[in-house]
View 1: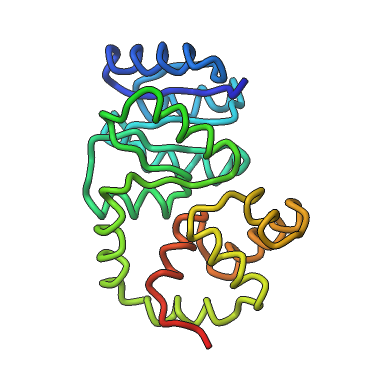
View 2: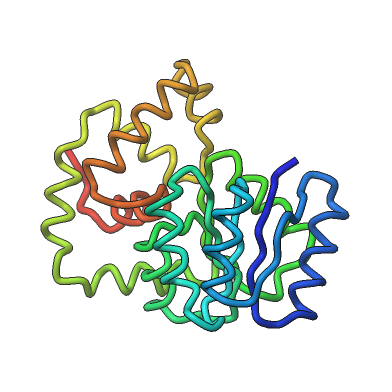
Length: 213
């Protein structure tokens, strides 16, 4: 069972998500709240595997995400929100969120997304991908980020390119005929070198960089 804390200031929506996830059979909702303060308190008390946060709740979901990611790096944080702005998406990813899911997603799809995130994947709603790329193009530090990509070893570059195609660590390991723990080790090095917080940011940086020779 994947233990989840769910924080949203709309009780009816929160209850609906809670029921849907528990009916999926692989999730257990161990705490519910309505504010950033609730999120921090529940995480400290329950130590769940995963936290779902709304962006616009009292106290701000992005700030809560950053605090949770800083103090509890093993906990997966996902934003479940109506906001489709590039600024919010980028801010959430920079805060350390492993997923950015738009409200309105079906219950079956949400369960699949969260299952993938629990397995080490990242997710951004497809409709937001293009906006995210535009946002990155406009960032003045892009040249410096391209230089960071050049610090990757050939193997790290190979792994990142497979991750950017949506592969999980397990799928990458099978494709390259190496151990999954080796892929995890390389991914840790990749994130450190690129100075990003998650796989999604790393993949987007790669997609925006000029081809390496």
